[in-house]
Image (cartoon, rainbow, N blue to C red; front, top):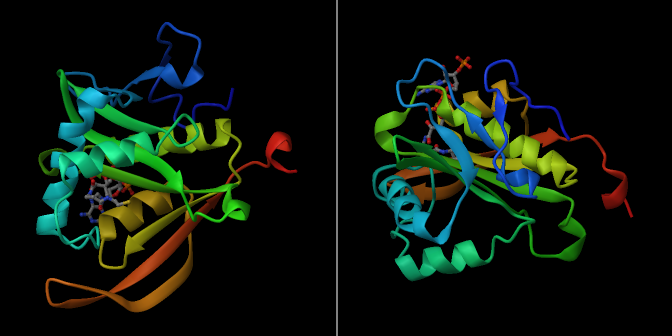
Length: 203
Ligand SMILES: CC(C)(COP(=O)(O)OP(=O)(O)OC[C@H]1O[C@@H](n2cnc3c(N)ncnc32)[C@H](O)[C@@H]1OP(=O)(O)O)[C@@H](O)C(=O)NCCC(=O)NCCS
């Protein structure tokens, strides 16, 4: 198994079951209700959607301008099978954030590459959970044999750029004024993390 990237801080607790991706990990020790990360289930979709839609309305972190409907969220989830995991971070019985690995592009030769997303509920930012969810996604991407992870980040989103940079992502491209939201022109920065080459994916 790929080593836990922050093993010293987030000791791995194995859940029962035969899928390594069902592992749950204890969260930052400073928190009163210790959070866990687990794979998302259908029952989590309403919380996932509420967390995301907040940013659709209030921020430029996503270029989506209309909130996702429950039906759209279900469709999105159905498109994320075991090869493209969706995770949630749960604390005190509540989903307070989520992460995902998605296809980078539809065309088949892009298969070794995934794109990541991390969204935390707006009232739990800055507590270390974003980095934790991202580290967990990196582990999952490596275990699934992907070659690299891409993050497309709006250039003014300094928290996201920071968290990806600290996790080892490097800026590889900047697209100028490709977005417009809330009366602002928006640049997109692409950050990339190369992963160890996996023999079963190299063909
Ligand atoms: C981006 C996001 C995932 C980061 O998660 P977080 O839990 O708030 O951040 P963390 O507490 O893990 O902090 C990670 C690093 O970012 C830094 N950081 C946190 N908030 C920051 C801010 N507003 N500005 C600059 N740096 C910030 C922290 O200091 C920390 O840096 P360090 O490791 O050098 O100490 C979270 O803020 C979020 O969900 N934002 C809204 C949605 C979003 O932008 N998602 C990313 C799209 S892919």
